[in-house]
Length: 373
Image 1 (cartoon, rainbow, N blue to C red):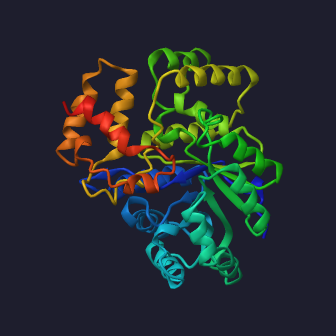
Image 2: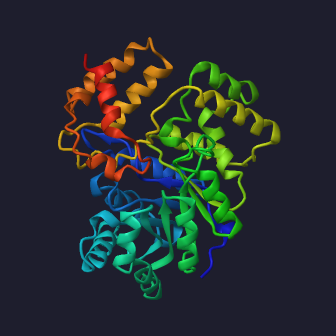
């Protein structure tokens, strides 16, 4: 069954960065956020087997599945290549996901984080594309696709080989258009030219495009003083033809209320506003930043328990605001709960799973020189 783009909500609720309290998902707050979202007739929820250490799918069950009719929302989740060691693992993981989420089927199911090399090879080795078709025939999956972090060349190869793919999820935001690693503009063009519906992840780049230096933020505020900086990032991607849904990994009520405001009576980006976005893009690119999106794929397997995204967040903040004492205070508190940057033993586990392909080991060494003196 083909996806009707006109029936898809433009704003999707990403369940990767849910609010936490005492180290666990704050279900009371998540329920309130879900209620805000559902009242506005928004209904696309995106989770994954590995989000929140496996608890994101459970949170979807508790906050959504148990509290709303099944036909009132769409639930998407993902199969992780790195958890597949033998063919039987595919069905085992899928059945576990159904149980965690408390559903009989998933509306959207994705092969998680396809990229050049190991992940794609794993999905091919264990026949995951054919498996997806089988699950569709069984009614366990309504729509089948994948999330993507690879090269444009591989994307075209996959799409040629697998016409059964109904949609693709890519990282897309105004800052990554010409990023030589992400290459999001090239990925977007390939999908749009083939009329393949696009789901956007990281539209605000892990929050980076929601918090800016005052002089850069002022460029947006001069044009739309009542709108948040984050709204510009969301409107940019939602204005692009072929974009089916824009995922926002919302982590508090304020964010979801602001995002709903952005998508209520949605206004596409005008030519004048696009010029402002281009100006802001150049201003941001002139400030060296670590391109971490805080996906936290690197943290579960770190033997030193280093909260790598938080370390990089501290460094990026200091680069923008060198005299901000709060950043180092934040880091000092972080060391009380996790490892320090200088604790890195260079095992490389983090670099093997980083979707942004960051040289994490060397970046942690640099961070240690700044933060652990």
